[in-house]
Image 1 (cartoon, one colour):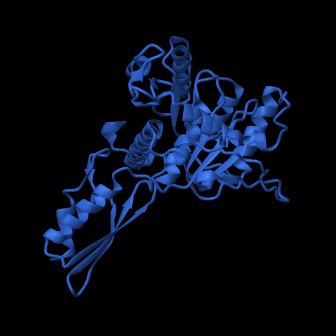
Image 2 (cartoon, rainbow, N blue to C red; image 1 turned 180 degrees about the horizontal axis):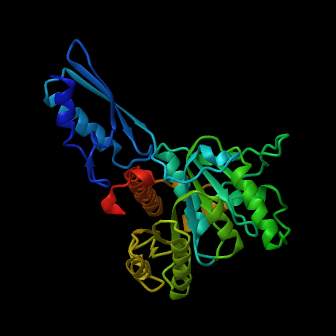
Image 3 (cartoon, one colour; image 1 turned 135 degrees about the vertical axis):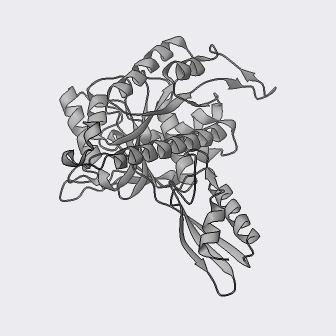
Length: 369
């Protein structure tokens, strides 16, 4: 049994999203064959939150043992592929692998609830996660996570995020203002604060930074899309037509600025009765499906209305933490898995596209001119 034989056999393990085998993708590293015919290797995936990592591990171990190895030890790790974007000088964002927008065209659709629970779902899967609450006028992450402390401020006027429940690093305007007083700022002031939140916060090394966008498509949204190297966006809607109309505007905004949309989340999709356990559709059905088909983006999930989900947010504990066995928690976990898979695909596509263009002008073949 040789290293070449093992690698050849491992080519049978395919990544279902990238449609290439794990050897070709460079996932197999540090392959060692011991004197006792034992085999150890490292499987370096594109994200620590990979939803099929255990399946990869099991397949690799089974293949290696079938070749005659006395034992097979597969260690999982991750090195996320980053969407190729120019780095901002003197910005702590450069240590963040992926920045994901969570947005909606209008308020009241539960966008912050979706952001908080997606962050927890990603964290529980093994990823390092942060949240930037970019809603200057109506911040809610302080309430969602029960944060009652201010971030540390340093002499160079940078700050550290607050480490909240679930291991989430959070920065929100609610940490700097009186909760009973309105923030009455003009657009340029709010945009400048957003730039400070982005570049002057010591985020540390994160796999995913979720940006809770304010509702609408105005100054702050434009600042975020221009200042953030966004890997993708999740757009939240509810089934009603009035929400869908604004959802279309949000999708159109990301399309206009060249940010790939990972998919749509339909919140408050249906209600599950405590007594009969049936799904009751209070609002019209099929809104999320229609939007996803119209814009050619996936419907990541349909979040049910659960009384516990709303109450645990008020208690400062996101539902995925408070009741991990609930239907909504299962859907949030599914949405998080689908989102990170789409991010990995976009990152791979971006890196491959850029690697294709390696010629200088003088080196271009004459037939291409």
